[in-house]
Image (cartoon, rainbow, N blue to C red; front, side, top):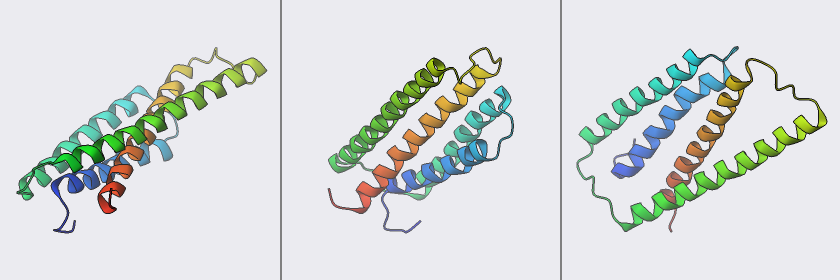
Amino acid sequence: MAPNLSYREKSLYASLVAELLVYGPYFFLHQQNSINKVAGMIVGIIVLQIILQSVIADVTRNRVTDERDRLIELRGYRAGYLTFASLMVLGLGMLWFHSTVGHLELENRMIGLHFLSVFFGMLVIADITKTAAQIMAYRRAL
């Protein structure tokens, strides 16, 4: 990380790296979903975030936040929320469409785990959108 980055920027970059390292392999390299993989993903992101944020907090001396930081955080959360809400509406619409047309059999015993993975995917996309929006806001003028 460049030394001219603020504490919050370093924290955001670390969060983005942790999210991509943990969520990427889970969603793109898995063959069969299981509760153990979901639990491993959650534990992995928690442990990695604790380690990365602790290192950044130890290295960074000036951790003061101002109103610009709070405004950027709010803009990021707005982008993440809009992404999540849009994906939920799209997903529910697709579920309704496929169930009414008859292409989706809801009797499958793994359907709950499938919905859990799709829901986690929506959360991950929204969280990465939030983090990326905050990073972009720091790099350009408000």
